[in-house]
Amino acid sequence: MTLVKPPQTGGFEEERHHDSPRTVCARGRPRCGDGPAVDGYTIEFTLVDYGEPGSSDRAALRIFKTANPAEVVLNVPLQLLTTGNLQAHYDQPHKT
Image 1 (cartoon, rainbow, N blue to C red):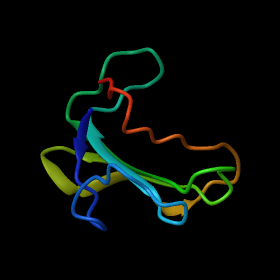
Image 2: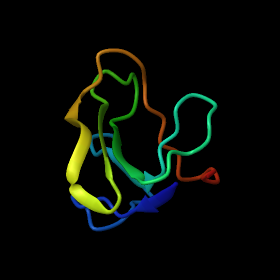
Image 3: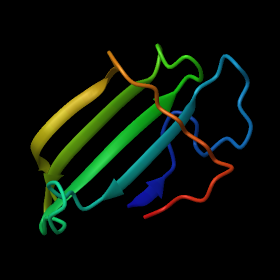
């Protein structure tokens, strides 16, 4: 996965105030379960962490053909998560 700059902020924020979210955008090759990455396709996702308790967190994802980004296979627009709690921590190393 490659971290990309969130379009809303123009970059990553190292410090967050209690009312401003942390946004992580990334791009990479999708995989299904424990299988290998799927060649020819790209996944992009946006995760927005509004802090505790997680009831306002949002996520979006898009899978498309790498050679033709207009050919979208799956598009889930940014939306409120109904369960779970995103944890965006910039003080911890990102793993790929």
